[in-house]
Length: 56
Image (cartoon, rainbow, N blue to C red; front, side, top):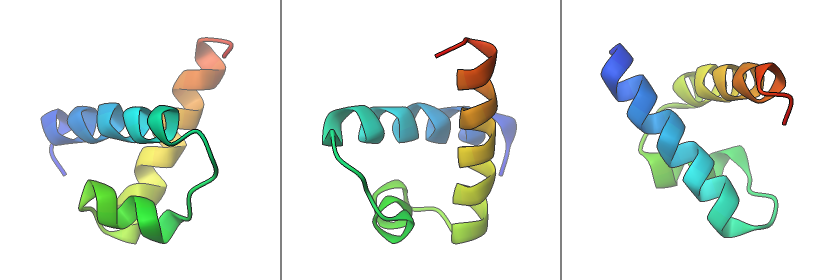
């Protein structure tokens, strides 16, 4: 996954989590974002690091 696509998918992940307002399974998020499970795991890790860095 290129850096540009990774950033787009991170933005999509944040939007999906915010808009849904309830827990989502990883399987459902994989389908919504159109990524593989391994790619989602990478995105979730990056997203978590960014949230921690922003103290959110």
